[in-house]
Image (cartoon, rainbow, N blue to C red):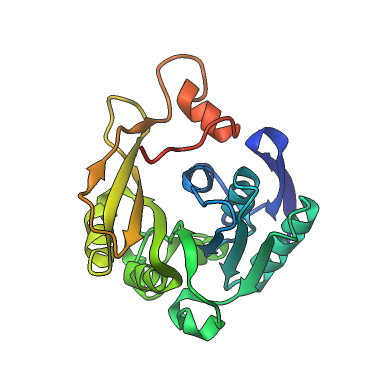
Length: 245
């Protein structure tokens, strides 16, 4: 596997990841910024890949312990290597496993917080022949329901579930999580202020009962020469989190 070494959080995290195939990008950065684990909390990322979101979240939340679940052996090996590379092996572990097998198969107790960037597609007909090395990251075996079902099992009662996904799947996310989770907070992510959101970041509390709250959107770009808005740039550099208030 050809591997590149990249930097996240303005150089605070070194990430070795495949040169081809799925690579950590904006979605992983926003998921990490949305993680609000308390000190001493146990956090699980389902489908951690090479560890982009996992390690960025662990760096941001330096008093919590993190577990990454990954079914691809090569990606899991890279994630472990990256944890060691960043001196995080004492707080970050990576285990082999598939969300479709369920939490019970892992022999783990439920977590205080769980997070995921699930594959965006359920139907192979929606994609135009993705490269083989990207198929696993783009196509959800068992559909989105397999992921939401796993996350609901993986979170303890009162624990948080945080997901970033396509904005047009928001109704599916809410419907699948709602039977056992509530207190939803939704952050739309817009490319520009005058364009519809393409992503949503959803946080739910298992057994939560508070009313749904739609938060102000995060706008990634403006019409200036800057690559990102001031707010988005601060999040990407690790100078700000993505708050849930």
